[in-house]
Image (cartoon, rainbow, N blue to C red; front, side, top):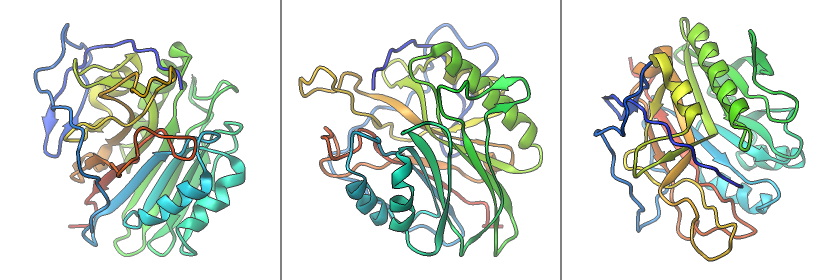
Amino acid sequence: MHRFLLAFPLLVASVGCQKTTGDESPPAGPTSLSTPASQPQNPQSQTSKPEDSLTILAWNVESGGADPKLNAKQLAAFDQSDIYCLSEVHPSDFATYREARGSSFASFDSKSGDEDRLQIIYNTDRFEMLEERELERYRDYVLNDGRHRSPIYVRLKDRKSGIEFVVMTNHLARGNEKFRNQQAIGLREWARDLAQSVGVISIGDFNMDYNFQDQRGNAALAEMLRDNVWVWAKPNPLVDTNWDDRDRDGKDNYPDSMLDFAFVAGPASEWSPECEVIVRDGDFPDDNTTSDHRPIELTLSPFSN
């Protein structure tokens, strides 16, 4: 995956569990509220979560560059999550990933994206499906021009508490900066309207090129965070989420950077969001059987009251 970094400064405000929002007028330089980059020496795995928490795992499984059977085996080991948001899924592998989580899980699978599609897998014992949709456009904002992937979302209802929420997953444009910015604006306006009445979560591969050293992402991240509609659940510590070694010298061409994000809006921003990057022994550098992305995990507490 080719990455071209164009950095834009962000005004960062930290509230509670490392939640980060943008501002209408970003400052000229990087924020001083930095989180030190970290490359854990010991592998991380999912830990037991409180019963009243909501846990969402997002992972780019790299269709065509990884073994889906190995990915599915690894996905089955991430058994603490309630919802799984996958990107770069080959359509022939939808069932493989869904079945890796067992008979109590169902999925909503995207139709756009050719061989790099999106999938949301959710626990039907815990949640009732109210709505599922693939969003090609919102109002006048085009989210898929026919050459990319439309975001997908599900609206779920917790069977025990009755609380409703929306989970969207995305894989924004990589090489088309102008269109990626338009996608980010459209997602912001979609959330601005929807989050008036329901908690909204958006998680996945946003290709927003956040660099740990200067605390900056590209223009799409600035657009996403404008007006504080979305809150970024920023991992603490920051951990590189993508391995890129196209020159095959054994080194990551973009170390200490992040492509994968979790955002919350509306009531969900008050659900104590915490995000972490899951690091496993030997995950980087990747090879032709493993994904070039690390999973990220978002934990919220909407059911505790």
